[in-house]
Image 1 (cartoon, rainbow, N blue to C red):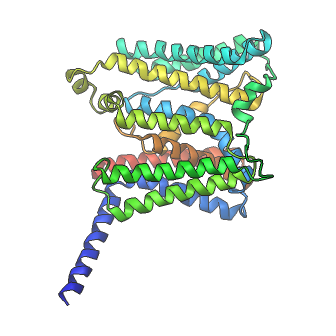
Image 2: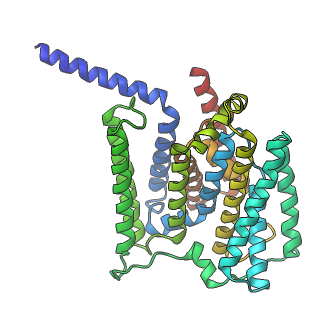
Image 3: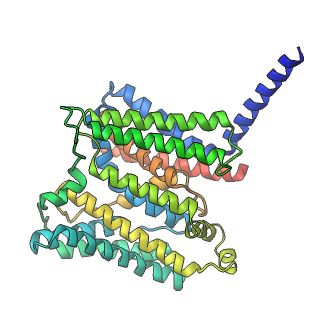
Length: 398
C-alpha cells in the first residue's frame, strides 16, 4: 500500500514539476506550440494543401531570405538595438549584383564575395556611429533605410535589371541532385534530412546526460521534445524528397543556423552580446569592449542582409527598384514573435527561426485561403502585438 502511495506521490510530483517548468519556460515552448497549432489549422483549412511537397518547398523558398536576416537581427535585438535598414540594404545589394553580373558581366562568385563585403562594410559603418558616438540605432538605421532606398533607384536608373546567369540562380532555385537516381524520390535529400534529425537528437541527449544545458527540465518532457523535433525533420525531409529534394538555399540556411546557434550558445563572444543587452554598463565594467562588439554585431547584420539580397534577387531572377520594401518589418517581427525581448538580453536562434516560419506559414496559409493582403497585414500586426504583450506580461510575472 505504501508503494502505491509513493508511486502516486512521485507521479504527482513529476506532473507538478513538469507543469511548473512549462510555466517558467512558456516563452520557449509557447512559440513551438503556436507554430504547430497554426500549421495544423491551415493544413485542415486548406484541405491538406499546406503540407503538400510542392507547397512546402515554396514555403521554404519564399521565406529563406527572411530567416537568414532574422539570424543577424536576433543578435542586434539581443544587444539592445534595432536595425531598420536591412530591407533597403537587401534591395541595394541585389541591385549591385545585377549591375555587376548583367551589365558588366562579372563572374557570379566574384560578385557575391564583393556584395557580402559591401554589406559587411555598410553594417560596420552604421554600427560605428551607434557604438562609438552613442547615436540611437533607430535614428542611424532609419537614415540608412532612406539612403539605400535612394541608392537602389540611383544604381538601377529606376528600371529592373535581369536576368541573372543560371549558375547564380541555383542559389535560390536549385536542388540537391540525387546520386541514387531513384526516379521521382530524392533519396539523397531524405537521407541527409534523416541524418540531421538523428544528429540533432543525439546531440541533445549527449548535452542532457553530460550535465550541460537546462537540467531543470523534466527528463520525460525533454525526451518528448527531442523526439518531436526529430520526427518533424524526418517527415519534412520525406515530403520534400517526394518533390525535388532539398533546395540549395535550405542547406545554406541549415549551415547558418548551426553556426549561429554555436556562436550564441558556446562562444565567449556570443555570451558577451547577451551581456551587453542585459546591462551594457555592467558589461563594460567587466572588461568587455562593448563598442567593438556592437559594431561587429551590426557589421554581421549587414553581411546577412547582403546574403538575403543575393538570395532574393536569384529567386526573382531580376533586381527591382522596389525590392526590399517593408522586409525589415517582417524580419523584426519574426525575431520578436520568436521570443526575443524588446529590452534586449533575451532571445534564441531557434526562436528567431520558428518566428520566421510562423510568419511564413501565416502568409502562405492566408494566401491559399484567398485572404486579401489588407487582412493579411492586419492579422500579422495583431500577432506581433500579441507576442510583445506576452513578453511584457511574462516579465511582470517573473
